[in-house]
Length: 330
Image 1 (spheres, one colour):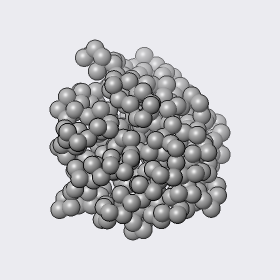
Image 2: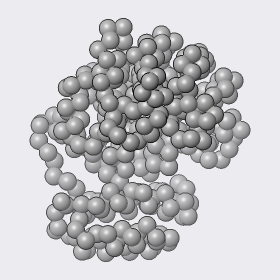
Image 3: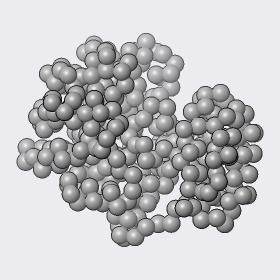
Protein backbone atom coordinates (compact mmCIF):
# COMPACT_ATOMS: atom_id res chain seq x y z
CA UNK A 1 0.00 0.00 0.00
CA UNK A 2 1.40 3.40 -1.01
CA UNK A 3 1.03 6.22 1.50
CA UNK A 4 2.29 9.78 1.30
CA UNK A 5 2.41 10.81 4.97
CA UNK A 6 -1.14 9.84 6.08
CA UNK A 7 -2.64 9.89 2.57
CA UNK A 8 -3.59 6.37 1.51
CA UNK A 9 -3.29 6.04 -2.27
CA UNK A 10 -4.16 2.35 -2.52
CA UNK A 11 -2.14 -0.69 -3.54
CA UNK A 12 -0.61 0.64 -6.76
CA UNK A 13 -1.56 4.26 -7.43
CA UNK A 14 -1.60 6.01 -10.80
CA UNK A 15 -0.74 9.69 -10.64
CA UNK A 16 -1.28 12.45 -13.19
CA UNK A 17 1.96 14.29 -13.88
CA UNK A 18 1.96 18.06 -13.51
CA UNK A 19 2.07 19.49 -17.04
CA UNK A 20 2.05 23.15 -17.99
CA UNK A 21 -1.11 24.18 -19.87
CA UNK A 22 -2.42 20.60 -19.57
CA UNK A 23 -3.09 19.49 -15.98
CA UNK A 24 -5.60 22.23 -15.22
CA UNK A 25 -8.93 21.66 -13.41
CA UNK A 26 -10.93 20.83 -16.60
CA UNK A 27 -8.48 18.09 -17.57
CA UNK A 28 -7.95 16.87 -14.01
CA UNK A 29 -11.71 16.33 -13.66
CA UNK A 30 -11.68 13.93 -16.61
CA UNK A 31 -8.64 12.03 -15.30
CA UNK A 32 -10.23 11.69 -11.86
CA UNK A 33 -13.40 10.28 -13.41
CA UNK A 34 -11.27 7.67 -15.19
CA UNK A 35 -9.58 6.42 -12.03
CA UNK A 36 -6.53 8.63 -11.47
CA UNK A 37 -5.54 8.26 -7.79
CA UNK A 38 -3.65 11.50 -7.27
CA UNK A 39 -3.14 14.61 -9.34
CA UNK A 40 -0.98 17.70 -9.34
CA UNK A 41 -1.57 21.23 -10.52
CA UNK A 42 0.40 22.76 -13.34
CA UNK A 43 3.68 23.96 -11.93
CA UNK A 44 3.57 27.42 -10.36
CA UNK A 45 6.41 29.94 -10.36
CA UNK A 46 7.01 31.02 -6.78
CA UNK A 47 8.03 34.53 -7.87
CA UNK A 48 4.66 34.95 -9.60
CA UNK A 49 2.86 33.53 -6.60
CA UNK A 50 4.40 35.87 -4.03
CA UNK A 51 3.79 38.83 -6.34
CA UNK A 52 0.14 37.84 -6.71
CA UNK A 53 0.38 37.40 -10.50
CA UNK A 54 -3.02 36.39 -11.88
CA UNK A 55 -1.83 33.34 -13.83
CA UNK A 56 0.12 31.93 -10.88
CA UNK A 57 -2.66 32.53 -8.37
CA UNK A 58 -5.28 30.97 -10.66
CA UNK A 59 -3.29 27.74 -10.69
CA UNK A 60 -3.97 27.40 -6.97
CA UNK A 61 -7.62 26.62 -7.80
CA UNK A 62 -8.40 23.14 -6.52
CA UNK A 63 -11.73 21.43 -5.94
CA UNK A 64 -12.87 18.86 -3.40
CA UNK A 65 -13.70 16.29 -6.09
CA UNK A 66 -10.04 16.32 -7.16
CA UNK A 67 -8.60 15.26 -3.81
CA UNK A 68 -6.04 14.08 -2.97
CA UNK A 69 -4.14 16.72 -4.92
CA UNK A 70 -0.72 18.31 -4.80
CA UNK A 71 0.19 21.88 -5.68
CA UNK A 72 3.55 22.01 -7.45
CA UNK A 73 5.91 24.98 -7.21
CA UNK A 74 9.29 25.85 -8.71
CA UNK A 75 11.82 28.47 -7.72
CA UNK A 76 15.43 29.12 -6.83
CA UNK A 77 15.45 31.55 -3.88
CA UNK A 78 15.05 30.40 -0.27
CA UNK A 79 12.98 33.37 0.90
CA UNK A 80 10.63 33.12 -2.07
CA UNK A 81 10.15 29.39 -1.55
CA UNK A 82 9.27 29.98 2.12
CA UNK A 83 6.68 32.64 1.24
CA UNK A 84 5.24 30.48 -1.54
CA UNK A 85 4.98 27.50 0.83
CA UNK A 86 2.82 29.62 3.16
CA UNK A 87 0.55 30.62 0.26
CA UNK A 88 0.25 27.01 -0.91
CA UNK A 89 -0.57 25.82 2.61
CA UNK A 90 -3.41 28.35 2.78
CA UNK A 91 -4.86 26.84 -0.43
CA UNK A 92 -5.16 23.56 1.51
CA UNK A 93 -3.93 20.84 -0.85
CA UNK A 94 -2.94 17.42 0.50
CA UNK A 95 0.66 17.83 -0.67
CA UNK A 96 3.18 20.50 -1.65
CA UNK A 97 5.36 19.27 -4.50
CA UNK A 98 8.64 20.84 -5.63
CA UNK A 99 9.52 20.72 -9.32
CA UNK A 100 13.17 19.88 -9.88
CA UNK A 101 12.50 18.30 -13.26
CA UNK A 102 11.26 20.84 -15.81
CA UNK A 103 13.82 20.86 -18.65
CA UNK A 104 12.67 24.04 -20.44
CA UNK A 105 15.51 26.47 -21.14
CA UNK A 106 13.87 29.58 -19.66
CA UNK A 107 13.41 27.68 -16.38
CA UNK A 108 16.75 25.88 -16.11
CA UNK A 109 18.82 28.95 -17.03
CA UNK A 110 17.68 30.46 -13.72
CA UNK A 111 18.71 27.31 -11.81
CA UNK A 112 15.07 26.30 -11.37
CA UNK A 113 13.39 23.04 -12.36
CA UNK A 114 15.98 20.60 -13.70
CA UNK A 115 18.56 23.40 -13.62
CA UNK A 116 19.09 22.69 -9.91
CA UNK A 117 20.50 19.26 -10.85
CA UNK A 118 23.74 21.13 -11.55
CA UNK A 119 23.97 21.97 -7.83
CA UNK A 120 22.78 19.09 -5.64
CA UNK A 121 23.74 20.81 -2.38
CA UNK A 122 21.51 23.75 -3.31
CA UNK A 123 18.71 21.35 -4.28
CA UNK A 124 18.85 19.72 -0.84
CA UNK A 125 19.02 23.11 0.91
CA UNK A 126 15.95 24.41 -0.97
CA UNK A 127 14.04 21.23 -0.16
CA UNK A 128 14.92 21.34 3.54
CA UNK A 129 13.84 24.98 3.70
CA UNK A 130 10.41 24.18 2.22
CA UNK A 131 9.92 21.13 4.46
CA UNK A 132 10.62 23.29 7.51
CA UNK A 133 8.32 26.08 6.27
CA UNK A 134 5.09 24.09 5.99
CA UNK A 135 2.92 21.58 7.83
CA UNK A 136 2.01 19.98 4.49
CA UNK A 137 3.75 16.79 3.36
CA UNK A 138 6.44 17.83 0.85
CA UNK A 139 7.19 15.69 -2.20
CA UNK A 140 9.66 16.17 -5.06
CA UNK A 141 9.60 15.45 -8.79
CA UNK A 142 12.94 15.34 -10.54
CA UNK A 143 15.03 13.69 -13.27
CA UNK A 144 17.98 11.30 -13.23
CA UNK A 145 20.50 14.13 -13.47
CA UNK A 146 21.67 17.05 -15.59
CA UNK A 147 23.31 14.78 -18.19
CA UNK A 148 24.51 11.19 -18.46
CA UNK A 149 27.88 12.05 -16.85
CA UNK A 150 26.30 13.53 -13.71
CA UNK A 151 23.67 10.99 -12.65
CA UNK A 152 23.67 10.95 -8.83
CA UNK A 153 19.98 10.23 -8.32
CA UNK A 154 20.52 7.39 -5.79
CA UNK A 155 22.47 9.78 -3.55
CA UNK A 156 20.01 12.60 -4.25
CA UNK A 157 17.06 10.41 -3.23
CA UNK A 158 18.70 9.55 0.09
CA UNK A 159 19.56 13.15 0.84
CA UNK A 160 16.07 14.43 -0.01
CA UNK A 161 14.53 11.75 2.19
CA UNK A 162 16.91 12.72 4.99
CA UNK A 163 15.66 16.33 4.95
CA UNK A 164 12.06 15.19 5.20
CA UNK A 165 10.33 14.66 1.85
CA UNK A 166 7.43 12.19 1.94
CA UNK A 167 7.61 10.79 -1.62
CA UNK A 168 9.82 11.08 -4.69
CA UNK A 169 8.73 10.95 -8.34
CA UNK A 170 11.50 10.40 -10.87
CA UNK A 171 11.38 10.91 -14.62
CA UNK A 172 13.76 8.42 -16.20
CA UNK A 173 15.62 10.93 -18.37
CA UNK A 174 18.32 13.53 -17.83
CA UNK A 175 17.71 17.20 -18.48
CA UNK A 176 19.93 16.97 -21.56
CA UNK A 177 17.62 14.33 -23.04
CA UNK A 178 14.54 16.55 -22.67
CA UNK A 179 11.82 14.12 -23.86
CA UNK A 180 13.94 12.33 -26.48
CA UNK A 181 15.13 8.75 -26.49
CA UNK A 182 13.81 6.10 -24.16
CA UNK A 183 13.32 6.69 -20.45
CA UNK A 184 15.81 4.66 -18.38
CA UNK A 185 14.14 3.17 -15.32
CA UNK A 186 17.19 1.24 -14.07
CA UNK A 187 18.22 4.06 -11.71
CA UNK A 188 14.63 4.34 -10.48
CA UNK A 189 14.76 0.63 -9.68
CA UNK A 190 18.04 1.09 -7.79
CA UNK A 191 16.43 3.75 -5.61
CA UNK A 192 13.38 1.62 -4.89
CA UNK A 193 15.59 -1.34 -3.96
CA UNK A 194 17.95 0.75 -1.82
CA UNK A 195 17.43 -0.50 1.77
CA UNK A 196 17.93 3.04 3.07
CA UNK A 197 14.81 4.28 1.29
CA UNK A 198 11.44 4.05 3.02
CA UNK A 199 9.35 6.72 1.23
CA UNK A 200 7.20 5.91 -1.84
CA UNK A 201 9.13 5.97 -5.13
CA UNK A 202 7.01 6.91 -8.14
CA UNK A 203 8.29 6.10 -11.63
CA UNK A 204 7.62 8.38 -14.60
CA UNK A 205 8.48 8.27 -18.28
CA UNK A 206 7.15 6.48 -21.38
CA UNK A 207 4.24 4.65 -19.71
CA UNK A 208 1.74 4.60 -22.58
CA UNK A 209 0.00 1.21 -22.28
CA UNK A 210 -1.38 -1.16 -19.65
CA UNK A 211 1.24 -3.79 -20.53
CA UNK A 212 4.11 -1.37 -19.99
CA UNK A 213 2.69 -0.18 -16.67
CA UNK A 214 2.49 -3.75 -15.34
CA UNK A 215 5.88 -4.73 -16.78
CA UNK A 216 7.61 -1.74 -15.17
CA UNK A 217 5.75 -2.26 -11.90
CA UNK A 218 7.02 -5.83 -11.75
CA UNK A 219 10.52 -5.15 -13.06
CA UNK A 220 11.41 -2.09 -10.98
CA UNK A 221 9.17 -2.50 -7.93
CA UNK A 222 8.02 1.12 -7.86
CA UNK A 223 5.23 2.10 -5.47
CA UNK A 224 3.23 3.83 -8.21
CA UNK A 225 3.41 5.27 -11.69
CA UNK A 226 3.04 8.87 -12.82
CA UNK A 227 1.59 9.35 -16.30
CA UNK A 228 2.08 12.49 -18.36
CA UNK A 229 2.01 12.71 -22.14
CA UNK A 230 0.06 9.46 -22.66
CA UNK A 231 -2.91 11.00 -20.83
CA UNK A 232 -3.16 14.11 -23.03
CA UNK A 233 -6.48 13.79 -24.85
CA UNK A 234 -6.78 10.25 -23.51
CA UNK A 235 -7.78 10.22 -19.81
CA UNK A 236 -8.99 6.63 -20.30
CA UNK A 237 -5.36 5.46 -19.89
CA UNK A 238 -5.97 5.40 -16.12
CA UNK A 239 -8.98 3.09 -16.18
CA UNK A 240 -7.33 0.86 -18.80
CA UNK A 241 -4.21 0.36 -16.70
CA UNK A 242 -6.22 -0.22 -13.53
CA UNK A 243 -8.37 -2.84 -15.24
CA UNK A 244 -5.31 -4.61 -16.67
CA UNK A 245 -3.51 -4.60 -13.29
CA UNK A 246 -6.59 -6.17 -11.68
CA UNK A 247 -7.62 -8.67 -14.35
CA UNK A 248 -4.81 -9.05 -16.89
CA UNK A 249 -7.36 -8.19 -19.57
CA UNK A 250 -7.78 -5.19 -21.86
CA UNK A 251 -10.78 -2.92 -21.75
CA UNK A 252 -12.11 -1.97 -25.19
CA UNK A 253 -11.11 1.58 -26.16
CA UNK A 254 -13.74 4.28 -25.65
CA UNK A 255 -16.21 4.62 -28.50
CA UNK A 256 -16.80 7.85 -30.37
CA UNK A 257 -19.78 8.83 -28.18
CA UNK A 258 -17.66 8.64 -25.05
CA UNK A 259 -14.80 10.55 -26.70
CA UNK A 260 -17.07 13.32 -27.94
CA UNK A 261 -18.76 13.60 -24.54
CA UNK A 262 -15.36 13.94 -22.87
CA UNK A 263 -14.16 16.51 -25.42
CA UNK A 264 -17.34 18.56 -24.98
CA UNK A 265 -17.03 18.49 -21.20
CA UNK A 266 -13.36 19.40 -21.47
CA UNK A 267 -13.82 22.38 -23.80
CA UNK A 268 -16.85 23.65 -21.84
CA UNK A 269 -14.96 23.65 -18.54
CA UNK A 270 -11.84 24.99 -20.20
CA UNK A 271 -13.77 28.02 -21.46
CA UNK A 272 -15.44 28.50 -18.07
CA UNK A 273 -12.08 28.43 -16.31
CA UNK A 274 -9.88 30.38 -18.75
CA UNK A 275 -12.24 32.37 -20.94
CA UNK A 276 -13.15 31.71 -24.57
CA UNK A 277 -9.90 32.60 -26.32
CA UNK A 278 -7.46 30.76 -24.06
CA UNK A 279 -9.91 27.98 -23.26
CA UNK A 280 -10.26 27.05 -26.93
CA UNK A 281 -6.56 27.58 -27.71
CA UNK A 282 -5.28 25.30 -24.96
CA UNK A 283 -7.74 22.55 -25.88
CA UNK A 284 -6.11 22.11 -29.27
CA UNK A 285 -3.29 19.87 -28.09
CA UNK A 286 -5.85 17.34 -26.83
CA UNK A 287 -7.89 16.84 -30.01
CA UNK A 288 -5.32 14.69 -31.82
CA UNK A 289 -5.43 12.06 -29.09
CA UNK A 290 -9.17 12.24 -28.52
CA UNK A 291 -9.87 11.14 -32.07
CA UNK A 292 -6.69 9.69 -33.61
CA UNK A 293 -8.08 6.15 -33.52
CA UNK A 294 -10.62 6.74 -36.30
CA UNK A 295 -9.87 6.42 -40.03
CA UNK A 296 -10.11 9.58 -42.10
CA UNK A 297 -10.33 11.84 -39.05
CA UNK A 298 -7.60 14.29 -40.11
CA UNK A 299 -9.84 16.89 -41.82
CA UNK A 300 -12.00 17.10 -38.70
CA UNK A 301 -8.95 17.48 -36.47
CA UNK A 302 -7.65 20.23 -38.74
CA UNK A 303 -10.92 22.08 -38.33
CA UNK A 304 -10.92 21.59 -34.56
CA UNK A 305 -7.44 23.10 -34.15
CA UNK A 306 -8.38 26.14 -36.23
CA UNK A 307 -11.89 26.74 -34.84
CA UNK A 308 -12.08 29.81 -32.62
CA UNK A 309 -15.72 29.91 -31.48
CA UNK A 310 -17.35 27.53 -28.96
CA UNK A 311 -20.38 26.84 -31.17
CA UNK A 312 -18.08 25.98 -34.07
CA UNK A 313 -16.14 23.51 -31.92
CA UNK A 314 -19.32 21.83 -30.66
CA UNK A 315 -20.70 21.59 -34.19
CA UNK A 316 -17.55 19.84 -35.42
CA UNK A 317 -17.67 17.44 -32.48
CA UNK A 318 -21.30 16.65 -33.33
CA UNK A 319 -20.25 15.93 -36.94
CA UNK A 320 -17.56 13.54 -35.70
CA UNK A 321 -20.04 11.73 -33.47
CA UNK A 322 -22.53 11.33 -36.31
CA UNK A 323 -19.95 10.17 -38.82
CA UNK A 324 -18.23 7.62 -36.58
CA UNK A 325 -21.21 6.33 -34.59
CA UNK A 326 -20.83 2.56 -34.49
CA UNK A 327 -17.29 2.64 -35.86
CA UNK A 328 -14.80 0.86 -33.61
CA UNK A 329 -11.61 2.68 -32.70
CA UNK A 330 -8.49 1.18 -34.24
